[in-house]
Amino acid sequence: MSEAGGFITARLLNGTSGTPPVDIGREPAREAARRELSDPAYHQNDPSLLQRGLNKFWDWVGSLFDSASVATPGGPLGLIVIVVAVIALIAALWWRLGTPHRAATSGGTVFDDRPRSAAEHRTAAAAHAAARRWNEAVQEQMRAIVRALEERALLDPRPGRTADEAAAEAGRTLPGHADRLHAAARAFDDVTYGGRTADEPTYIRLRDLDRDLERTKPALTDANHLVAP
Image (cartoon, rainbow, N blue to C red; front, side, top):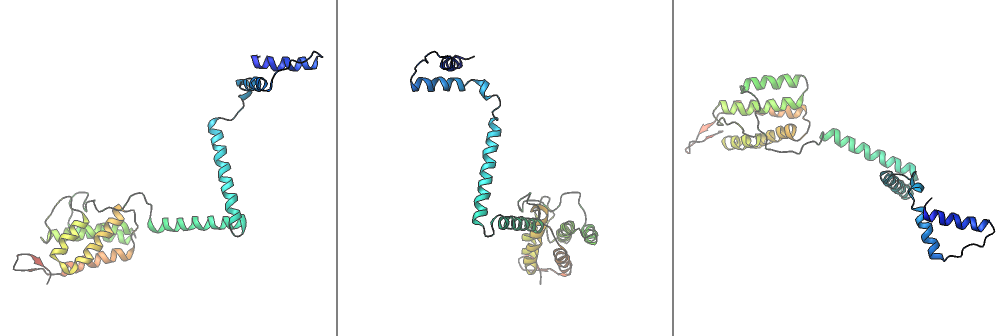
């Protein structure tokens, strides 16, 4: 038994055995009780610090929902309807925009594997489109565009070129298609690095651009630059 415990116990025994109780002041009695209750034996079953923190957190969450249900029209049922609507909106945005695991960037290169011809990239793009794999179809179609421009000497073959760089360089050579080239580069970056999902119209726009570029006949100007007539 602790010193304080013995003191309190003795005080109680004295009070019940007929012996005149020891008269102590209020402050000494409070201090003795405090020391007694600080004995670890009294706190063996107390919740841990983590458990106390969790209890306070859930109490806070409960009070927050209670306050919200009071302020929401329709009470708790109205609050549930609002929460379900918010979750549905988030799910719709997630489905429409894709998983936001990477921020959009224009720093990635167009080609990431062995060199292939424009015809090979077109064949791969068509195969992906037939299987409705629109992301891959858009990627391969953009690669076909850039490779075709390189094969026609409208772009200098250069490893590490980005889609934006290719569009900017080709746009100076073929100004009549500059806007469509930049749009194609953005579509490539969105599906390759931005976590977006392509669709059939996007693939068709790139495929049609590729065909139009093939039919474009560059002309030699006085400055010795090739431009579209």
